Length: 246
Image 1 (cartoon, rainbow, N blue to C red):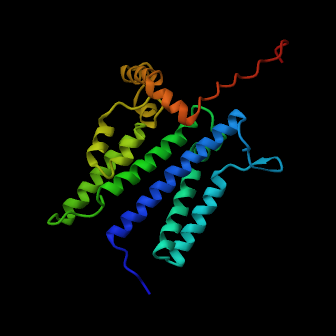
Image 2 (cartoon, rainbow, N blue to C red):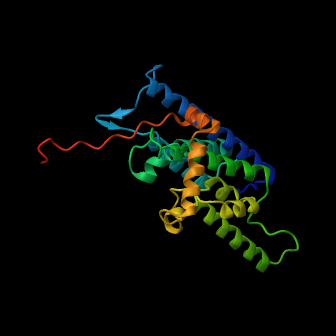
Image 3 (tube, one colour):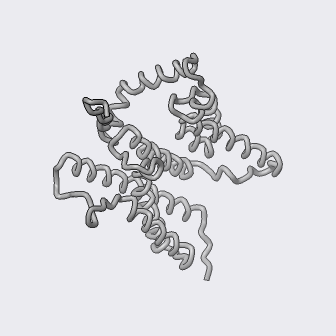
């Protein structure tokens, strides 16, 4: 028997998912910080000589909860529990987003900050969906042609913002189109795909982007980022060649 899920039910489920997602990320970061500092009873999970990253149980948790949701279609408390299980798995997986992006263990490096970015963007998008409306639902009285054009334009701006390294503005812009426009118009981050493609070495735009990134790296917000993501390890120096030159 199918039970219709109302808009209020959907909002309650989304709220529970947001709470589970954020709480899981916070607890996970606390545990890995304790492991890194050698405090507490926690340690890395290893099977033989293999380090089992926490994205592994996260992936399995998402697969199991999604299968239950699609096949058994639980309702009431079961529906919320299944949704929260998926959110927990998503948090564990996105906390190591940089690992499956770079295919390397960069958790405590500068590249590892992308994992925190991914979690923040996902939580921000969920929050926007919770407080806002469905961005893909046409307004009353709006023609389907005009609605389709507006969706395409919004997605183009959002995609440009993402390519410029403005991930939050790109993702949030899907719900609030003005943010996508702002992200598309702003200067690209120096290491973004957009900067590599359109900002030539030595150009004024690249110099401006690098100067802005350098200022941002030294501001107060960076200290908060270090508190959450951890201070990145210094880059390892390449091995020195032997003295005889061989």
